[in-house]
Length: 452
Image 1 (tube, rainbow, N blue to C red):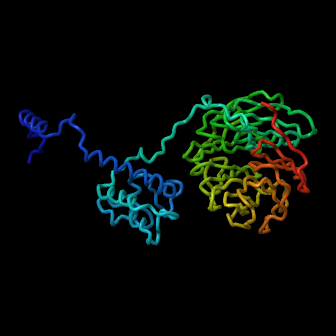
Image 2 (image 1 turned 90 degrees about the vertical axis):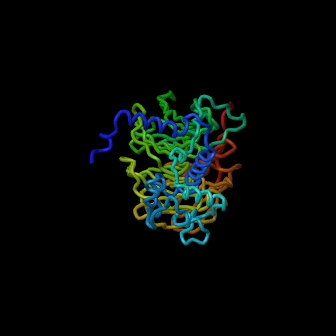
Image 3 (image 1 turned 90 degrees about the horizontal axis):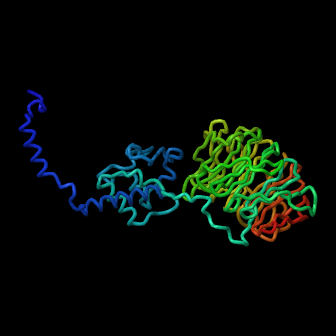
């Protein structure tokens, strides 16, 4: 038989074209309400997957070996088979797992309401139309230069850092950075650094003492500490720079930043020229703290997703993760020998981890609120925490509760740093003041912000 296309003469083709034109719906006809309802159903279903499922079932975190980021992967499924079977909602694992009596109930800590489950069921029965763009949380990035002024009295100390020689203390007071002279009492500040419009979220001093980095909203400023001149600026950032640290060789700067509702991004910048060397998505949500191992090879990150993750600084690849706390992880500190890592959470707990095996070596309870910051200045078993009640607490890597509670600051504490010998500790408070403690637990000095 001759192939069909060879037997369609021009006359027959013309006739077919006329038939098709009369039978085909008009291009400019009014939108079919059924199409609109179908789109609404698909959009609603995509949003349910985005908000309730994909956080635990994606390329980086695929619980049960299930990735729901793409339709083909959802059809393939995980350990228990296909997640969805178009046209057959009752046979689809995703619907079965939403049943409150399911052995593998999802989401694990909540129950979708009947209407949400029904929406997903109707969507599957209708063919499970996939709209990838609806899985993305859309956010608008605000230009940092268009931020309004902070309220006049709002000058919290959210971040501070001691210079390597312990003679200077740089702290964010609202949107200004004050470099305090702590080598001599009753001396005026050494410098006041401006250039941020939002509150300073992070401060880091290079190990060689030559540079200070200050982080705010979508901006990092790099300063020359010899004369306090501005060296450069990093503006390729998604949101507030929530944590920051230099590598031990002072050659690179690590930043953590995220836009509201987005994943926390970690980036590595070369100090010479401030070129971005590496960047990667580190956590679902804010990265509250970062800490580099004493040997300079591994970066630990603390996330709003309750995880602690370890990364290769050379490649930006994840080495391991710990499901560390039942609430966001707020603070981290390596023991100076690198064998242990301490993590503090919004669950009021301090935990000690073996950095090789991920084994939890100790759990310290007894904090009245957030464990906002941790200092582990010496290779001993003793470490110090800062909390919501303004007090510092002395903890031990093997004791179950804090051993001592030191004098309280007049407001809640956000940050903490210790001198190299561990004899003095400095905490930044919400009232804009910095408090200094000696090893007897007494507040020996208070540093107030300069007048605007």
